[in-house]
Length: 106
Image (cartoon, rainbow, N blue to C red; front, side, top):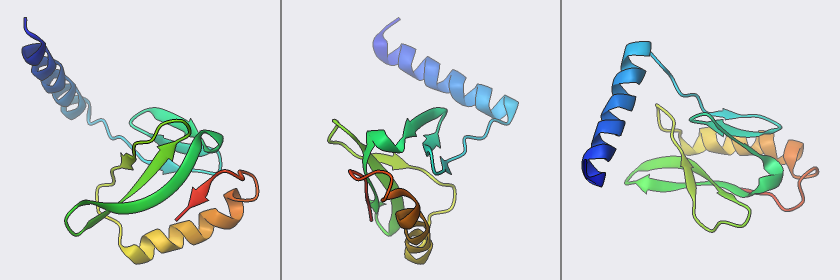
């Protein structure tokens, strides 16, 4: 089996399994870190939490891990508005920035 065929087989199997088991991946942002798609990252391993346009007109949250320079977008079912993102950041900043000096929010 070639690499491309194996990738499509794996992706199709994962989608079918998720559909059959009604699996839902939740994005969770807590005072300990960020969890999505079963991956958890502590705040002390994150340099920056912000937002940007991944698709035209659709704001998405993203973070950058310490030591890695690329953005990791955090998918949500309904795109967040700029007001919702601002409210989230206003809640997170006073709770996290005093504890994590290298973390930038916004």
